[in-house]
Image (cartoon, rainbow, N blue to C red; front, top):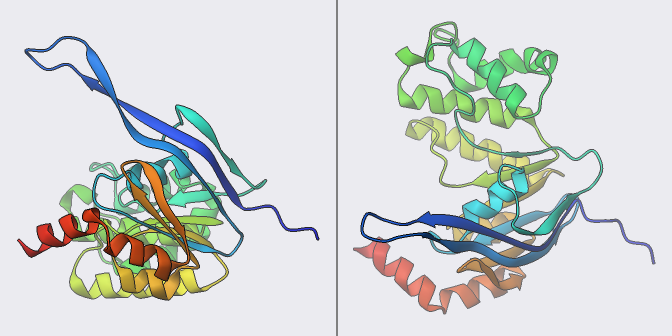
Length: 245
């Protein structure tokens, strides 16, 4: 039986950060953010990634997006696959207008300039910024910049969408709107990797789940099984206690 090759293959990936010496110490040391992480992502699949803060989840997303390189291991994509980490205000410069920043940000996310132009009206309408799009974004609020950043990233429409729930998207009404848009995108045939603490979203949207702990894969498989293991861990207890304090 012939099976299709995965859209993404992560093989024994490790990433370390340099920790420089402080005032009263000499030299430097390294901290491993990821160690020996391996998994595949198939076409049309949504993979959830869970774990406490500092476990290595965001580092992993940056590796998948090509923002960070690996100190060991490989990340292989199917030919022609374009991936994008949904991050707000990519390439935003305060002296440029919203129009100019949207164009630059879209190009940094992998679009050609004519592709940004073709989607520009939709980008602005979704962000609800028609009245200020030609003003310098230095005059905008943080929420307005976040709305434009989300809309540009959303309309870039990559083959592999990398989502980090730490993203802020402006006011409550726009947060609800953007969350609904992302859920619709995930339910389509797009391939997604979703980092989240929201167990309901993992159950609802994800085909598989990976639990990252201390930079390694602690568990992988069906969402309900992985979440059950995570909920029974000391890591989950520590996170729950922190949220309650």
